Length: 234
Image 1 (tube, helix red, strand yellow):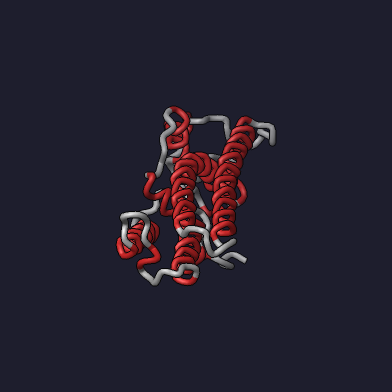
Image 2 (cartoon, one colour):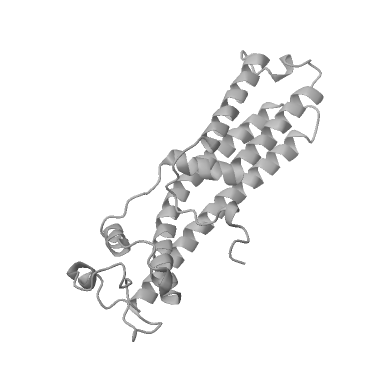
């Protein structure tokens, strides 16, 4: 298996012949260094994927517990639901940090899939990135996080947390309007903070979350699955 196509790379180019020489020789079997490298990166990506899922699972469990207790009686204070929203925010930031690490390992896996295995299966399509060896080598020498915290938060908001926040805010609104003897918006007050101020604060927080999730941006995360490609190569 060659590392680059003849039409893309000059055969006299010593840089491409020497960098990683031998890793993709045709006689190398499944036990080659490249196969072990790929297996190791898959393991690390799987480990961080599981950490993401655990954070999401705990967020759902906490949310379910808060809603169950909050609606178990008319005397339950509505601010317990706000504590649940604060807990979701903490899980969101924790999961965003884990997503940044997950993106690092997933990026390496995708480099190998696109430029080694995809090319080996069908060389006629050429390489996805002629500089993949240099980029992967540099990443192994100096691993760096590829995406910002804000982009990671946007990814997790789009995937699950915006829906969870919507459910919690909807539950809070129902609680302060249907389960309180005090009329709205006075029923939303917490101590010296008036109901109007409380509702306005929650509205601002939710709008900020929506803006972070859907504002136009150049996505840097390795996100290979897109809705527009559903059924494209079936």
